[in-house]
Amino acid sequence: MRTPPPAPSSGDENLRMRSELLRLSEQQNRLFAQLQAGEEHFKQLARSVWRVQENERRRLARELHDGIGQHLTALRHRLEGLGQNASCAEDARLRQAFDLCEVAIAEVRALSRLLRPQILDDIGLDAALHWLARHSSEDTRCTIDVNVGKLPSPLDSDLSTLIFRVVQEALANAIKHAEARQVIVSLSQRGDSLLLLIVDDGRGCDVDDALRRSSESESTGLASMRERVRLFGGQLELVSQPGEGLQLRARLPLTMEPDAR
Image 1: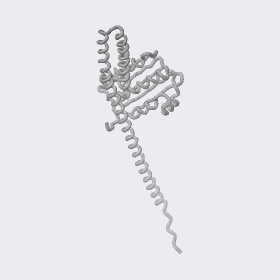
Image 2: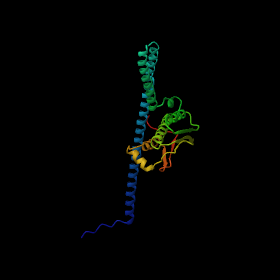
Image 3: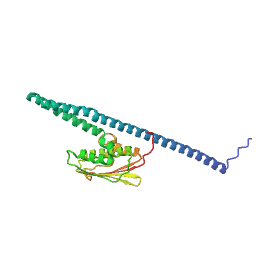
Image 4: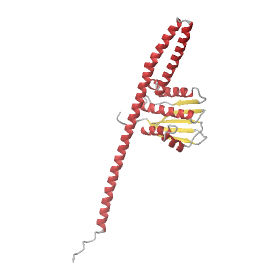
């Protein structure tokens, strides 16, 4: 009759359990590291795509302004010259052509600024935000106040563009969807971060529902705005209740996260 093998001691069993737990812990740490690396790679790709989009907007805006816009301006001058020596019948037709040319010039300029206002690249964020406030309040009953504190100079180009786009989207939402009558935009530096605060007196909303509808492309771009801020290491918070207006608070690091530019 065979002698049964000796039962493992409790010490051996504890050692095997510790060894297995250590193996599982190391495997978990490797998976977490791979997940973090994949997430960071995705963020880098997303930032690169966003940057390419902005560069293309900049190129198209300048081509519209310096190309088509200049040709239309030259055409307007030619029509003015022809009108000085035209007969009454010709003058009426030239006047119609001149008016159409004026409309085309205005639309090209508006489209160029909508794509990317040249003032953002030429003068800076402060001037661009004040221009945006004036432009957004035109033909509306909404009053927009912009307060910009002392900002670092030079300010990172991506950070300037990001803030401008967030304010642009927020103002469009406040005027178009919330029917606000007053909006306050405040931008200041706090330590190594920029703090952006946008407050409106509009209809307000259920934030969770608004973000859900936004993520499903049913309404405003609140969700995409928040994700864009997160891509660059920032945080965006929305505070609102139906009938109580909306507050947008964003904190953005002055030192942008490094990536392959």
